[in-house]
Length: 166
Ligand code: SF4
Image 1: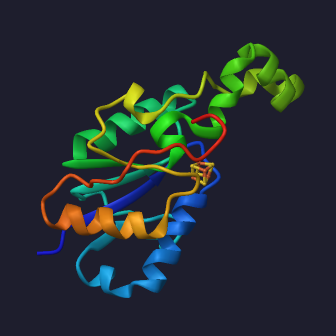
Image 2 (image 1 turned 120 degrees about the vertical axis):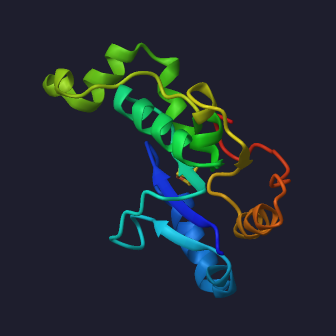
């Protein structure tokens, strides 16, 4: 039986998910060995039964935290997809400034309408089983990670920084 896979995004530019889509187009054979049940960028179905979760983006709101924990409870394997999920990424630049100043800059006089707090990596909220680093991720490394997961191995992707806040 093919493992069921879901993709999720939190605060991010979605560039890592686009890289995944590009990889799947170039390597359609990957779609023969996994079943994607949720991937907002590519399909409208929202399957909640999955074993592997790829999560893009950093946690920046209390509601993100609740959803990330929910995904962790469902998935046997959680993979941080890209620098935002792995390290906070470009979102974490704002952590260098007072939060109120950032909120005012972004939302102006509507700043109290939006819940937000300093950007955090997934690992600050849940246990993460594997990481695909990069901003964005590398296509070959995503394909390698999927292959390793199918072999029952923890993806062995070298961890190296690629963007400003990493
Ligand atoms: Fe976008 Fe880079 Fe974050 Fe990926 S790691 S979602 S490419 S900002």
